[in-house]
Every structure is written in C-alpha cells, then in structure tokens.
Image 1 (cartoon, rainbow, N blue to C red):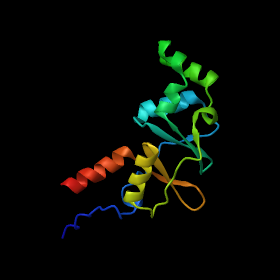
Image 2 (cartoon, one colour):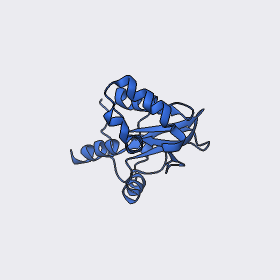
Image 3 (cartoon, one colour):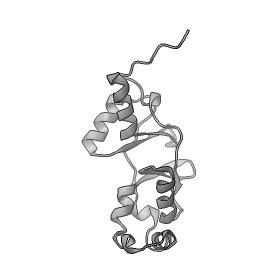
Length: 148
C-alpha cells in the first residue's frame, strides 16, 4: 500500500522540507571559490563554516555588491584572481545569521524570512553545527504541494 501523502501546515517542522544536500564554504577559503561554487551548483546562499560550526552566510548578493569592478573583467580566471586578491569571505559574509532548529515550524521560517527580508535560513543543531538549510525555493515547493 503506498504511503499516504504528507500534509504540510504552518506547524510542520522545517526538518520535513529542509535541504540536507549542502554546498558550504569554509571561513578560510577565498571569495573566488565561493563564486565558483555558486555558479557550478546554481545556489545563491553559502553557509560559511569553521569546521562544522556555522559562522555566517554568504549570498550571491553579498558577493556581487562587493565586486563592482569584477563585471569589467572578461575571463573566468581573471575574475577568480580578482576575487581572491581583493575579497575575503569574513569581510563580506553576514556573521551570526538568523537560524532555525530542525523542530521549528514552517510558519516560523516563513515569518522570519518575511520579517527580515532574507532568502534562506540555515538549520543548526544545539552545537550550532549546520544540519540543513531552508530557502525561498524550499518554501515555494512546500506551497506548491499545499496547492495541489
């Protein structure tokens, strides 16, 4: 017998929809790598870790607003060199981002994202270690499921 379809509500824990396939970057890495990861994996938010502990979040917007000159460089190699030389991750990331715990609800995630005008919420455990992320896309997918 097939499993009954799940019914999402505002009270559903975020662990039900969070993305566990995480693309992250370490605090000590170069901004060029962050740009490359975002491009290669088509993500707009990179949790920044020190070991396993969440230290910040770097968005595509953070990266681009800090590299106006970047748009006048033609080759990918020159772009990465520019980023690596002039931008370091700690100086452009958002430190201590707003986070969720896995048992917090979709309603709480939605309220936090709307109130703070942010596109993602890292999900952390009691040690502040990253276990997932909830993005605008995840919430839109949940909404689409509700509308079926």
